[in-house]
Length: 332
Ligand code: CP
Ligand code: NVA
Image (cartoon, rainbow, N blue to C red; front, side):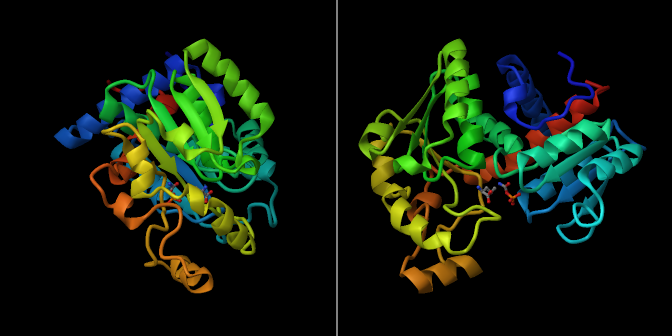
Protein backbone atom coordinates (compact mmCIF):
# COMPACT_ATOMS: atom_id res chain seq x y z
CA UNK A 1 0.00 0.00 0.00
CA UNK A 2 1.54 3.29 -1.05
CA UNK A 3 0.68 6.48 0.78
CA UNK A 4 3.83 8.42 -0.10
CA UNK A 5 3.10 12.02 -1.06
CA UNK A 6 -0.62 11.83 -0.26
CA UNK A 7 -2.52 14.33 1.87
CA UNK A 8 -5.12 13.46 4.51
CA UNK A 9 -7.92 16.01 4.11
CA UNK A 10 -10.91 13.77 4.90
CA UNK A 11 -11.34 10.01 5.31
CA UNK A 12 -13.62 10.13 2.24
CA UNK A 13 -10.38 9.99 0.21
CA UNK A 14 -9.18 6.75 1.83
CA UNK A 15 -10.47 3.23 1.17
CA UNK A 16 -11.48 0.93 4.03
CA UNK A 17 -8.31 -1.11 3.43
CA UNK A 18 -6.18 2.03 3.61
CA UNK A 19 -7.86 3.09 6.86
CA UNK A 20 -7.33 -0.40 8.28
CA UNK A 21 -3.67 -0.22 7.25
CA UNK A 22 -3.26 3.14 9.04
CA UNK A 23 -4.84 1.65 12.18
CA UNK A 24 -2.51 -1.37 12.04
CA UNK A 25 0.46 0.96 11.59
CA UNK A 26 -0.75 3.10 14.52
CA UNK A 27 -0.97 0.02 16.76
CA UNK A 28 2.54 -1.01 15.69
CA UNK A 29 3.98 2.45 16.34
CA UNK A 30 2.21 2.52 19.72
CA UNK A 31 3.79 -0.81 20.64
CA UNK A 32 7.21 0.39 19.49
CA UNK A 33 6.86 3.56 21.58
CA UNK A 34 5.88 1.54 24.68
CA UNK A 35 8.89 -0.73 24.16
CA UNK A 36 11.24 2.20 23.64
CA UNK A 37 12.07 1.22 20.05
CA UNK A 38 13.38 4.23 18.09
CA UNK A 39 11.42 5.46 15.06
CA UNK A 40 13.49 8.54 14.23
CA UNK A 41 13.73 7.85 10.51
CA UNK A 42 13.38 11.40 9.24
CA UNK A 43 16.38 13.36 10.51
CA UNK A 44 17.00 16.46 8.43
CA UNK A 45 13.31 16.76 7.46
CA UNK A 46 10.76 19.21 8.84
CA UNK A 47 7.01 19.75 9.08
CA UNK A 48 4.94 22.92 9.58
CA UNK A 49 1.98 23.03 11.95
CA UNK A 50 -0.54 25.77 11.14
CA UNK A 51 -3.18 26.43 13.79
CA UNK A 52 -5.76 29.11 13.00
CA UNK A 53 -7.83 27.71 15.89
CA UNK A 54 -6.50 26.71 19.31
CA UNK A 55 -5.54 23.16 20.27
CA UNK A 56 -4.07 21.00 23.01
CA UNK A 57 -4.24 17.39 21.75
CA UNK A 58 -3.73 17.88 18.03
CA UNK A 59 -0.82 20.25 18.41
CA UNK A 60 0.89 18.10 21.06
CA UNK A 61 0.22 14.91 19.10
CA UNK A 62 1.84 16.38 15.97
CA UNK A 63 4.80 17.79 17.91
CA UNK A 64 5.50 14.58 19.86
CA UNK A 65 4.96 12.41 16.80
CA UNK A 66 7.31 14.63 14.78
CA UNK A 67 9.95 14.47 17.49
CA UNK A 68 9.66 10.66 17.78
CA UNK A 69 10.06 10.42 14.00
CA UNK A 70 13.22 12.57 14.06
CA UNK A 71 11.45 15.46 12.31
CA UNK A 72 11.84 19.12 13.11
CA UNK A 73 8.57 21.05 13.50
CA UNK A 74 7.49 24.71 13.36
CA UNK A 75 4.29 25.77 15.12
CA UNK A 76 2.42 28.72 13.60
CA UNK A 77 -0.17 29.99 16.06
CA UNK A 78 -3.54 31.63 15.26
CA UNK A 79 -2.00 35.11 15.18
CA UNK A 80 1.68 34.55 14.44
CA UNK A 81 1.79 34.30 10.64
CA UNK A 82 0.72 36.18 7.53
CA UNK A 83 -1.76 33.47 6.48
CA UNK A 84 -5.01 34.84 5.13
CA UNK A 85 -4.26 38.36 6.35
CA UNK A 86 -1.35 39.45 4.17
CA UNK A 87 -0.73 36.28 2.16
CA UNK A 88 -3.10 33.98 0.31
CA UNK A 89 -3.40 30.29 1.10
CA UNK A 90 -1.97 29.43 -2.33
CA UNK A 91 1.14 31.59 -1.80
CA UNK A 92 1.58 30.28 1.75
CA UNK A 93 1.36 26.71 0.45
CA UNK A 94 4.03 27.38 -2.20
CA UNK A 95 6.37 28.96 0.35
CA UNK A 96 5.97 26.27 3.00
CA UNK A 97 6.21 23.53 0.38
CA UNK A 98 9.76 24.76 -0.39
CA UNK A 99 10.88 24.41 3.23
CA UNK A 100 8.89 21.56 4.72
CA UNK A 101 8.20 17.91 3.89
CA UNK A 102 4.62 18.13 5.20
CA UNK A 103 2.10 20.64 6.51
CA UNK A 104 -0.61 20.26 9.16
CA UNK A 105 -3.50 22.74 8.96
CA UNK A 106 -6.24 23.46 11.52
CA UNK A 107 -8.72 26.17 10.67
CA UNK A 108 -12.12 27.07 9.35
CA UNK A 109 -13.55 26.00 5.97
CA UNK A 110 -12.56 22.66 4.42
CA UNK A 111 -11.92 24.52 1.15
CA UNK A 112 -8.90 26.21 2.82
CA UNK A 113 -7.10 22.97 3.64
CA UNK A 114 -7.96 21.71 0.15
CA UNK A 115 -6.50 24.85 -1.44
CA UNK A 116 -3.37 24.42 0.67
CA UNK A 117 -3.00 20.82 -0.50
CA UNK A 118 -3.47 21.82 -4.17
CA UNK A 119 -0.52 24.21 -4.03
CA UNK A 120 1.90 22.80 -1.43
CA UNK A 121 3.52 19.97 -3.41
CA UNK A 122 3.96 18.07 -0.11
CA UNK A 123 1.43 16.13 2.03
CA UNK A 124 -1.09 18.29 3.89
CA UNK A 125 -2.81 16.87 6.99
CA UNK A 126 -6.17 18.20 8.14
CA UNK A 127 -5.89 18.89 11.88
CA UNK A 128 -9.60 19.99 12.02
CA UNK A 129 -11.81 22.14 9.86
CA UNK A 130 -15.44 23.08 10.41
CA UNK A 131 -16.46 20.11 8.27
CA UNK A 132 -13.98 17.32 9.08
CA UNK A 133 -11.58 16.04 11.75
CA UNK A 134 -10.06 12.94 10.15
CA UNK A 135 -7.09 12.42 12.48
CA UNK A 136 -9.49 12.42 15.44
CA UNK A 137 -11.58 9.67 13.88
CA UNK A 138 -8.50 7.50 13.27
CA UNK A 139 -7.79 7.73 17.03
CA UNK A 140 -11.45 6.96 17.78
CA UNK A 141 -11.41 3.90 15.53
CA UNK A 142 -8.16 2.67 17.08
CA UNK A 143 -9.72 3.05 20.55
CA UNK A 144 -12.85 1.16 19.47
CA UNK A 145 -10.71 -1.60 17.99
CA UNK A 146 -8.65 -1.85 21.19
CA UNK A 147 -11.83 -2.31 23.21
CA UNK A 148 -13.80 -4.64 20.94
CA UNK A 149 -11.10 -6.33 18.85
CA UNK A 150 -12.79 -5.42 15.56
CA UNK A 151 -14.75 -2.59 13.98
CA UNK A 152 -17.22 -4.52 11.83
CA UNK A 153 -20.70 -4.63 13.31
CA UNK A 154 -19.94 -2.18 16.13
CA UNK A 155 -22.76 0.28 16.82
CA UNK A 156 -21.61 3.82 17.56
CA UNK A 157 -24.22 6.35 18.69
CA UNK A 158 -23.38 10.02 18.41
CA UNK A 159 -25.46 12.28 20.66
CA UNK A 160 -25.51 16.02 19.97
CA UNK A 161 -24.83 18.33 17.04
CA UNK A 162 -24.07 15.90 14.21
CA UNK A 163 -23.76 18.58 11.50
CA UNK A 164 -20.22 19.65 12.31
CA UNK A 165 -16.73 18.13 12.00
CA UNK A 166 -17.14 15.26 14.48
CA UNK A 167 -20.57 14.07 13.38
CA UNK A 168 -19.53 14.21 9.72
CA UNK A 169 -16.18 12.50 10.20
CA UNK A 170 -17.51 9.77 12.47
CA UNK A 171 -20.26 9.02 9.97
CA UNK A 172 -17.66 8.71 7.19
CA UNK A 173 -15.26 6.59 9.28
CA UNK A 174 -17.92 4.27 10.68
CA UNK A 175 -19.72 3.61 7.39
CA UNK A 176 -16.40 2.95 5.61
CA UNK A 177 -15.41 0.42 8.26
CA UNK A 178 -18.60 -1.65 8.44
CA UNK A 179 -19.86 -0.04 11.63
CA UNK A 180 -23.40 1.12 12.45
CA UNK A 181 -23.43 4.89 12.92
CA UNK A 182 -26.46 6.49 14.56
CA UNK A 183 -26.87 10.23 15.06
CA UNK A 184 -29.35 11.02 17.80
CA UNK A 185 -30.53 14.62 18.17
CA UNK A 186 -33.35 16.93 17.16
CA UNK A 187 -33.74 16.73 13.35
CA UNK A 188 -32.12 20.09 12.67
CA UNK A 189 -28.83 18.67 14.03
CA UNK A 190 -28.70 15.77 11.54
CA UNK A 191 -25.82 15.85 9.02
CA UNK A 192 -26.05 17.30 5.50
CA UNK A 193 -28.18 15.21 3.12
CA UNK A 194 -25.44 14.98 0.47
CA UNK A 195 -22.97 13.50 2.94
CA UNK A 196 -25.62 11.17 4.33
CA UNK A 197 -26.24 9.80 0.85
CA UNK A 198 -22.51 9.33 0.19
CA UNK A 199 -22.13 7.51 3.52
CA UNK A 200 -25.10 5.35 2.56
CA UNK A 201 -23.00 4.17 -0.40
CA UNK A 202 -20.01 3.45 1.88
CA UNK A 203 -22.30 1.51 4.21
CA UNK A 204 -23.73 -0.55 1.37
CA UNK A 205 -20.23 -1.60 0.38
CA UNK A 206 -18.98 -2.29 3.91
CA UNK A 207 -22.04 -3.89 5.54
CA UNK A 208 -22.40 -0.96 7.93
CA UNK A 209 -25.20 1.59 8.20
CA UNK A 210 -25.98 5.22 8.98
CA UNK A 211 -29.25 6.13 10.66
CA UNK A 212 -30.80 9.13 12.37
CA UNK A 213 -33.32 9.41 15.14
CA UNK A 214 -34.63 11.83 17.74
CA UNK A 215 -35.32 8.95 20.16
CA UNK A 216 -32.68 8.05 22.75
CA UNK A 217 -34.32 4.68 23.37
CA UNK A 218 -34.23 3.78 19.70
CA UNK A 219 -30.65 5.01 19.25
CA UNK A 220 -29.05 3.52 22.31
CA UNK A 221 -30.45 -0.01 22.22
CA UNK A 222 -27.53 -2.33 21.46
CA UNK A 223 -25.01 0.54 21.38
CA UNK A 224 -21.37 -0.47 21.86
CA UNK A 225 -20.01 3.08 21.80
CA UNK A 226 -21.69 6.27 23.01
CA UNK A 227 -19.97 9.37 21.61
CA UNK A 228 -20.51 13.06 22.13
CA UNK A 229 -18.78 16.38 21.45
CA UNK A 230 -19.18 19.94 22.69
CA UNK A 231 -22.46 21.59 21.70
CA UNK A 232 -20.79 24.74 20.39
CA UNK A 233 -17.71 24.33 18.23
CA UNK A 234 -14.73 26.62 17.77
CA UNK A 235 -15.56 29.56 15.53
CA UNK A 236 -19.31 29.54 16.27
CA UNK A 237 -20.86 32.70 17.71
CA UNK A 238 -21.45 33.02 21.44
CA UNK A 239 -25.21 33.56 21.06
CA UNK A 240 -25.82 29.94 19.94
CA UNK A 241 -25.07 28.61 23.44
CA UNK A 242 -28.57 29.35 24.67
CA UNK A 243 -30.42 27.37 21.99
CA UNK A 244 -27.88 24.53 22.07
CA UNK A 245 -28.24 24.11 25.84
CA UNK A 246 -32.01 24.18 25.53
CA UNK A 247 -32.26 21.84 22.54
CA UNK A 248 -29.44 19.41 23.27
CA UNK A 249 -29.78 18.93 27.05
CA UNK A 250 -32.15 15.95 26.49
CA UNK A 251 -29.26 14.38 24.51
CA UNK A 252 -26.64 14.80 27.24
CA UNK A 253 -24.72 11.59 27.98
CA UNK A 254 -25.94 10.71 31.48
CA UNK A 255 -25.78 7.54 33.58
CA UNK A 256 -29.37 6.86 32.49
CA UNK A 257 -28.40 7.16 28.82
CA UNK A 258 -25.43 4.81 29.28
CA UNK A 259 -27.76 2.32 31.00
CA UNK A 260 -29.81 2.11 27.78
CA UNK A 261 -26.69 0.99 25.84
CA UNK A 262 -25.30 -2.55 25.71
CA UNK A 263 -23.65 -3.82 28.92
CA UNK A 264 -19.92 -3.15 28.46
CA UNK A 265 -20.55 -0.11 26.21
CA UNK A 266 -17.82 2.51 26.25
CA UNK A 267 -18.02 6.30 26.25
CA UNK A 268 -15.86 8.38 23.89
CA UNK A 269 -15.44 12.15 23.41
CA UNK A 270 -12.89 13.91 21.22
CA UNK A 271 -12.28 16.43 24.07
CA UNK A 272 -12.08 19.09 25.38
CA UNK A 273 -15.29 18.47 27.36
CA UNK A 274 -17.62 20.47 29.56
CA UNK A 275 -18.30 17.68 32.08
CA UNK A 276 -18.06 20.11 34.99
CA UNK A 277 -17.71 23.84 35.57
CA UNK A 278 -13.91 23.82 36.05
CA UNK A 279 -13.22 25.87 32.92
CA UNK A 280 -13.77 29.53 32.09
CA UNK A 281 -16.54 28.80 29.57
CA UNK A 282 -18.07 26.06 31.74
CA UNK A 283 -18.25 28.43 34.72
CA UNK A 284 -19.76 31.16 32.54
CA UNK A 285 -22.47 28.81 31.23
CA UNK A 286 -23.10 27.60 34.77
CA UNK A 287 -23.77 31.19 35.79
CA UNK A 288 -25.80 32.16 32.72
CA UNK A 289 -27.96 29.03 32.40
CA UNK A 290 -27.80 27.32 35.82
CA UNK A 291 -26.22 24.12 34.43
CA UNK A 292 -23.55 22.05 36.21
CA UNK A 293 -22.27 20.26 33.13
CA UNK A 294 -23.16 20.18 29.45
CA UNK A 295 -22.80 17.37 26.89
CA UNK A 296 -21.81 14.69 29.44
CA UNK A 297 -22.13 14.34 33.20
CA UNK A 298 -19.08 14.16 35.40
CA UNK A 299 -20.29 10.73 36.54
CA UNK A 300 -20.09 9.24 33.02
CA UNK A 301 -16.92 11.14 32.10
CA UNK A 302 -15.08 9.72 35.12
CA UNK A 303 -16.65 6.23 35.00
CA UNK A 304 -14.75 3.04 34.02
CA UNK A 305 -16.75 3.02 30.75
CA UNK A 306 -15.10 6.27 29.74
CA UNK A 307 -12.07 5.67 27.51
CA UNK A 308 -11.49 9.32 26.69
CA UNK A 309 -7.88 9.46 27.86
CA UNK A 310 -6.90 6.31 25.94
CA UNK A 311 -8.57 8.01 22.98
CA UNK A 312 -6.56 11.20 23.58
CA UNK A 313 -3.31 9.22 23.77
CA UNK A 314 -4.23 7.49 20.54
CA UNK A 315 -4.24 10.86 18.77
CA UNK A 316 -0.46 10.77 18.94
CA UNK A 317 -0.01 7.20 17.68
CA UNK A 318 -2.45 7.64 14.80
CA UNK A 319 -1.04 11.01 13.77
CA UNK A 320 2.43 9.46 13.81
CA UNK A 321 1.16 6.74 11.49
CA UNK A 322 -0.33 9.30 9.10
CA UNK A 323 2.88 11.35 8.99
CA UNK A 324 5.11 8.29 8.49
CA UNK A 325 2.85 6.66 5.88
CA UNK A 326 2.54 9.82 3.80
CA UNK A 327 6.22 10.81 4.05
CA UNK A 328 7.07 7.21 3.11
CA UNK A 329 10.40 5.39 3.47
CA UNK A 330 9.66 4.01 6.94
CA UNK A 331 12.30 1.63 8.22
CA UNK A 332 9.84 -1.07 9.30
N1 CP B 1 -9.72 16.60 20.06
C1 CP B 1 -8.99 17.67 19.65
O1 CP B 1 -8.82 17.93 18.48
O2 CP B 1 -8.46 18.38 20.67
P1 CP B 1 -7.67 19.77 20.54
O3 CP B 1 -8.67 20.79 20.13
O4 CP B 1 -7.13 19.99 21.92
O5 CP B 1 -6.60 19.60 19.53
N1 NVA C 1 -16.47 20.14 17.29
C1 NVA C 1 -15.35 20.60 18.07
C2 NVA C 1 -14.25 19.59 18.06
C3 NVA C 1 -13.06 19.94 18.90
C4 NVA C 1 -11.98 18.91 18.85
C5 NVA C 1 -14.88 21.93 17.53
O1 NVA C 1 -14.78 22.08 16.30
O2 NVA C 1 -14.63 22.85 18.33
